[in-house]
Image (cartoon, rainbow, N blue to C red; front, top):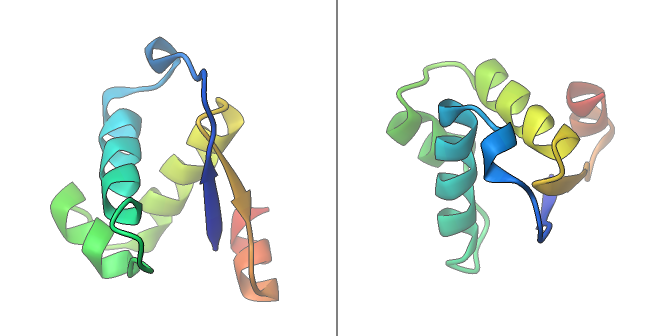
Length: 79
């Protein structure tokens, strides 16, 4: 999945866990490499990827980022 961060999102519209996810995701991707789901799950205290995907979808809906699935499987999980 390709994630593009958008400027101008209002942080007041996101929940605390969404912001935590956003900040971690942005920091990890700023390192300039692909980030595995495990690298995001552990620091967020999650054991399943579904809550992470949900948070990312909500961040996209709120204008924090744009998602571009790379595979049909990713497209199905984002839809």
